[in-house]
Image (cartoon, rainbow over all chains, first blue to last red; front, top):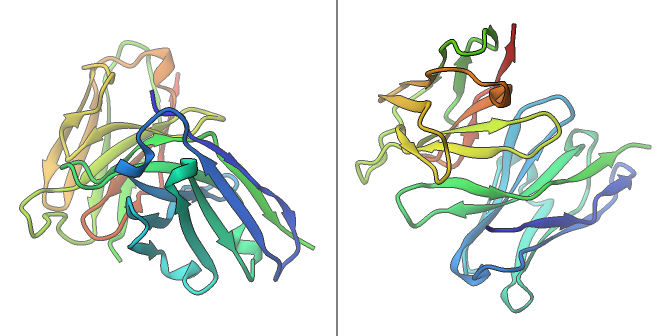
Length: 121
Length: 111
């Protein structure tokens, strides 16, 4: 079973920065696209970013373009989300998810437990 | 962006009875490769979502056969043949044809 463990969430002031991490022990991390999906308190799900297996392609939802950067270190089986210029509307639980992209699924088939980011003064 | 609209937004079901959730997309989900990337996910309270159905009607690994998906183009349905207690929570449809967007969610609870 795929295990994904997020960390790095917390309370940050508007305009501040935070770096989230996703550790993925126990599977061939470099073989998979990975994603960040967020969920504001009491709200639905929103895809945030994807990164290709080798990190050569990255895609973002419009609302975070220019502020968030996704990266990965396949040697450490880890993915990261650098979040800058944070806004109150970025407050959410951020999930790390594996994206089954190349196979005919194109869905998020494994999820971490999430890490909570609160943007507030 | 493709907008996904689910109905109903909440549903109270008797254990052992069927349940159905509809999902409509603002444009066709048929990809240029001919596949339709419509998935269904289930989120129990306090838990992350989990994938139930992908590509309209394919059950993901370990998903009970009481769950089934159907539809085409812009109209899709998730059916639970006999609701069990563990099925409570919120169900989301999601499209992966043009980026990834989710429906608002349908909360299923037991009467």
